[in-house]
Image 1: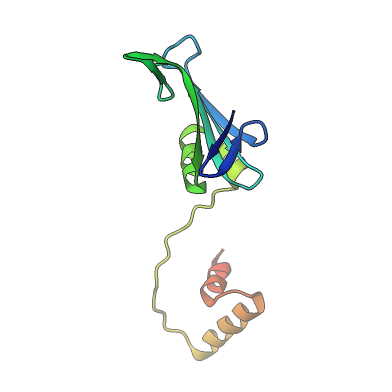
Image 2: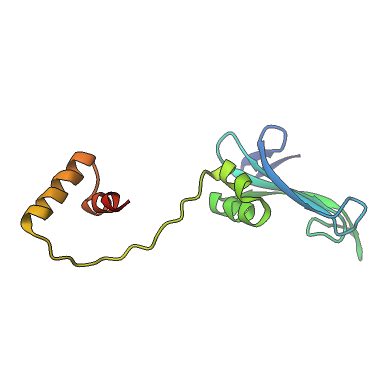
Length: 140
C-alpha cells in the first residue's frame, strides 16, 4: 500500500517490516492484522487491515461495511508503545535496542575528608565521568 499523508510518502513496499500482530483469521468479520514499518528516514508507521467489524472497516452504504486498510504514521514513542503491547521483549529490543532499567537516583549528603573528595574528583576526571558516576562505578 502507498499513501501520502501530510506531504510524506508511506509505502509498505519500500519500508522495512519490523513486526506484526493479528487477531483471528480473514474469515472472521472482526479479523485484523497490524504491521509496524520503519522508513529509510527512520520514521515509523503502522499498516493495518481488517474485516467489516474491525477498526479498519469502511462504510459502503447505509449500515453496510466492508473490510479495509489504513496507514497510520507513528512517532518513535508511539511505535515503542505499540511494540510493547504487541511484540515479545526480544522483538522489541531487536528494533529499539536493549532496554536498560534505570534506577531511581537520590541526592544524599556525605561527610568525607578533603583527601577522599580530591581522590574522587581526580578519579572521575581521569575516567571522564561525573563524580556521582565514578562513585557508583566503585560500588559495582
